[in-house]
Length: 346
Image 1: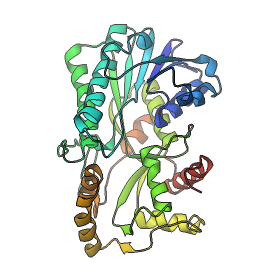
Image 2: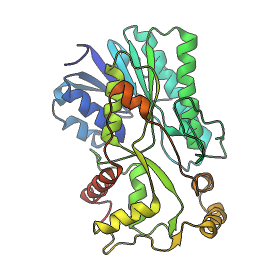
Image 3: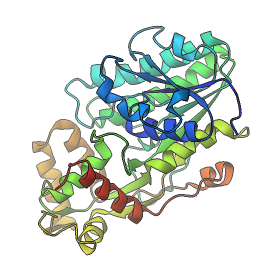
């Protein structure tokens, strides 16, 4: 049963993660408001209109950079889940395309929540990018860690997520907002999509299967299923004792093991899975040298992640929210099946 008969606002409602959140909320009996960039672009949110119980969904138009844009949507809401934020590794103008919408958007949404006077809790979608931008194999990451290394030149997307989350905590401390804040920090989010668009994390598997990678690099990814991320947000909203940050990540898996998994399930047939082994010291050196020929954001990511295995604890989210994660291997297989369904891979 819903914890309230008032509205829950989900910002960026047509996005990959947010669409799953909207569906979860509707299924649980909530009345949902969702913000989208433009109500004129109906194709972007048709999948929301087609969801079960969509008669309990209202959509509002809101721009992250426009002051007061979320006032109408937040009015009368008891809870807000703020997911809207740009996600691209390589931006032409990181300050304009990543930092400003992420930071100003967070402050704008929280200001609208304060103005509404009815909001009791905000759940913010942050990222593991706000916890680290260069994982260290000898350090176990927890919610106490903060990314202190990213800049506009080095992993600017990571910087945007760090600054946006810090803006949220700063607002809460300075503004006496009347609501509390719970933050979800997911690793790379994969899984089936409710819309035909291709999100950045799932693009990784398209690239693997289409021969974009020159070989099997010494990369290890932390993954989490989008369905688990959506549930984490809802549990973070519903659980009265929830507080602070929550690392939301199932497990890590290397590129070599991802390739082996896909190949073992027949996904390598007629496709271009990488075969050349670059996951060695010589390969690491070659990848780092060639990274300078890549787009700036991609190159920065490679230099800070090749040869590194992230270690993290998700004990807090399991203990306090009762979240049980799907197996990464099944999430990967569900993802590629979905990519085929949408025509992203043949």
